[in-house]
View 1 (cartoon, rainbow, N blue to C red):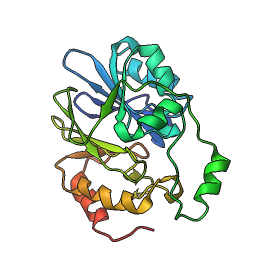
View 2 (view 1 turned 90 degrees about the horizontal axis):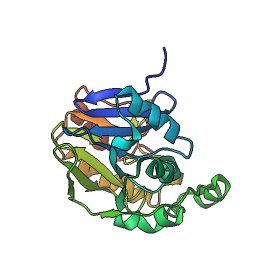
View 3 (view 1 turned 120 degrees about the vertical axis):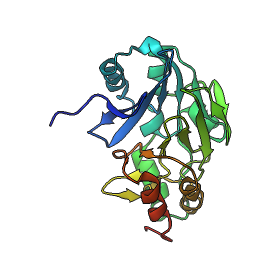
View 4 (view 1 turned 135 degrees about the horizontal axis):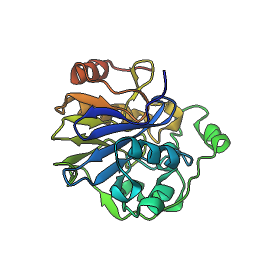
Length: 238
């Protein structure tokens, strides 16, 4: 089966795979006036696939008016500088991740996780730096397609956010949760504070949504909130 350049999740909400069929995803939210907000920009080579995804939904880079990043890791922010150059769109990141975004250096890794520091050195992780035009804070309601709510879920990074598109009731988790062979926690070695990741993700079980979209993995549209709440009710997934 051929990989789709863009996958519809809800009216005006599209998933754009940038690695594999769903291993790393960006999202396009199309407003009533035709403008596009991009959520996450993948790794450094992702912009070409983002442009193809936009074309598949009848859009052009010039239609992109805003870029929102869930956090400043290279698999989410690696393509941001280039996408901003192609589109002219400003970039929004939570204030706590601004220093990392603007230096092109990911946040520190959890010192309590065995091997995290060594893994970080081996993996590198730098990405092209970019200017943050809008620092986000918890509870912000962005003027995106009727309202995109910022939900601060720190731990994976200090400024990690999840995003709730209130009109379509689509939740974008970022890396608060993965959906790779089932719902699961992000890899411990990539977190700034893995214990905090587990603690703050529980807010996602209290939100109201009908579909949940992941940066890593396919969306869930059947009993999405129930599935997330069921997973979060477990004390630990290791």
